Length: 97
Image 1 (cartoon, one colour):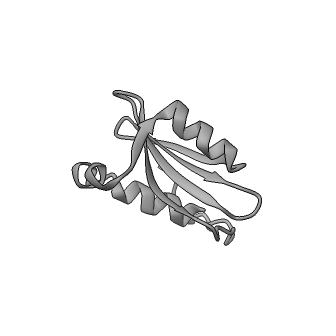
Image 2 (cartoon, rainbow, N blue to C red):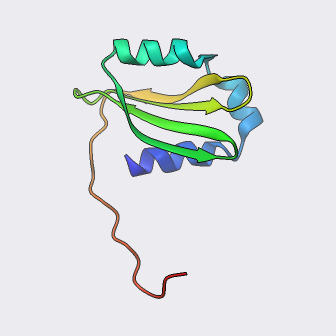
């Protein structure tokens, strides 16, 4: 799931291009649709005033959405049927800043 979030965050580097290609709707409609598919939020992050969420179902279905603070629209970045855990990243050793 960490890899999927990294990909979603990388897409934020190209917001104008990504927004033109992503299906968007009011957040309430998107959340309603995802819950109908029995998906739930498993990761959430904020970047550049946008909220990125990874939604996951017990069967492995997933959706990655971006919600813009301005306007409250949620846009589908990606969706699929085979999400699975690959382990936790190992913390880097060395001085902490």
